[in-house]
Structures are given as structure tokens and as C-alpha cells.
Image (tube, rainbow, N blue to C red):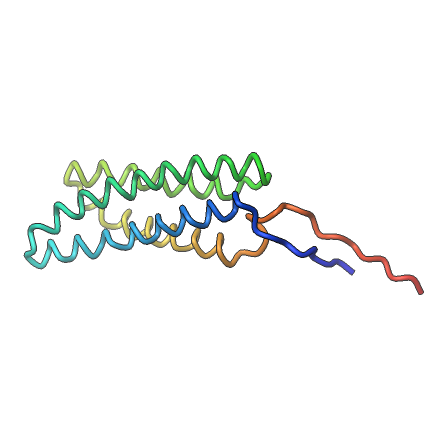
Length: 142
């Protein structure tokens, strides 16, 4: 019988959870500011620009934390997922600066969805950002 050992989330895992959570909170504000701008609140465009800087900065911080998770916990998936999200955010950032809304808006939707999925994986996905112990096989004697 295969049993999972009791897992505890490490400080590294908690740090990743905290950064991903902050990242999600920041990115969810972006469509709100964009929508407010499109309804005529022109100050919201400034908030959208500030939000883009915050989201991008948190994303780059998340890359660093994901590297630490990879090294300390031997979990590469948070790094790979983070790099994919941050690459999309970077393209989206420059598309927004360039006014390429045909790319900026759909890529923004996909980026928000990807980051929410990453958030769920980090918080609900089991022991994948925990202590890294492998499942043990219990032997029952007859």
C-alpha cells in the first residue's frame, strides 16, 4: 500500500504561496482599471499603468522565489509555470505600451487565467511545494 507521509509546508513553500497570492491580487485589478477607463474614467488608465508595473515587478520576484523552490525543494514545475506567465506578462506589458490592443486584451485574459490556475496549484495542489518527501510503501505481513 502506498501512503503519503505527513507533509508540512516549508518556509520556501509559504514564500511562494505569498508571492503568487500577491501576484493574483495585483493582476485581478488590471481588468477592473481597464474597464473603468473604457467607461470614461480616464484616471483609471494611470492606475492601469501603475498596476502593470506592480504586476510585472511581482512576477519577476516570483521567478526568483520559484528558482529557490526549484533548488531547495527540487520542484521545477513552479519555475516553469512562473516563467511562462511572466513571459506572457512581459509581452502583454509592451503590447499595452505600444497600443496593440488586439494582442494586449486577449493575452491579458489568458495571463489572468494562467496565474489563477497557478495560484490554485500552489495552494490546493497537495505537497508539491512542501518538504519534497516521496511517498512511502508500507509492507503488511501476512
